[in-house]
Length: 421
Image (cartoon, rainbow, N blue to C red; front, side, top):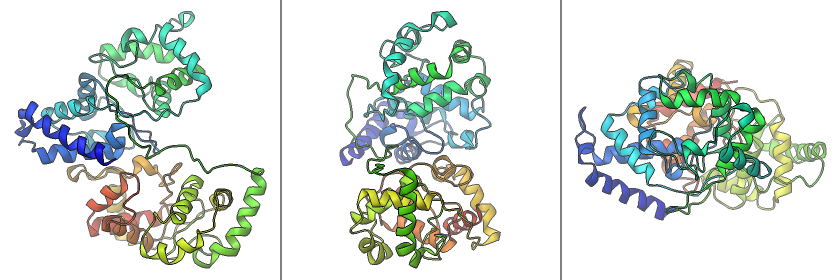
């Protein structure tokens, strides 16, 4: 990933030469440092080098996007003509000057990382046929007519190649309720009847095909940092038995620190109701010594030393099914400020909303943890530790986000989350 980071800095420097107007934009100016910070802000939600991110709200791939479409969408968020009712206040997130919009579009247009894929492979061929030929019986034209033979887009028609499968499914399924409400444009006029005519199986098929594409121009080899798959999640025995075995393991070992009902204590997190994939991955991180804060070293490295993938799966299956409860031990007077930070982030400080990844009730999804109801002292200490450089090898964006938070912001956020049920 270091080479990708270096490349990002070099491309940013090149942009400053190519687009000198950005250095002194129309509303007060935008320095090279400011542009670099805004690029990092984008990747916090859209993933390393713009690959997309599978959070509670799937964030689209913006790498390789056409510059005209990219700028148009940023402008649509600013004017609140696109998805104005979404939980994330996108008009605040994308409130950037025209000069910065142009520079961001140019930067991400030049990136081409490996796509996530993720769509069902058995649907790819059917999706290719729909993309190339359309569905004549339903008056659906070939997608390639507007988006190109390789789905790389053109001018205001977006690139779809390598787009996240869950994002494509969501957008096509919800088009008439979300995107069709945009200000009138040719794109909206064309896409609205097409999206309405596609059946759910057809949407899944064409999304699977598009998610599998990787444009043939210059490619960036990057590691998968937020893969929705979970390699150790193997079911060697029936599901019910997995839970029973996990219960025996948990009650005989984990309860010493995490409580009889896995609801945690001040310094030990609540495991009840936690996302199972996240639990498995953290057990593996303890086993491999990647979670390196002091208490992890002292307690969890030894506890996880002999855990294999099957055992981790059994523990996670049981703990995920235990009913969680809110710790409610934060400062009630700070909870309101914490909720605002969770829902909106701090756009002026390039801090993204937590809700984008962790969900409206902080329930998490996949490898993104449940935060709702965790103990205030535990949450506070973990956020401080991120900023101190522990777990430095962890996937973006948490190390960078936590490092930006002030002590007051951490206290407010931790207080709010402790009350979430």
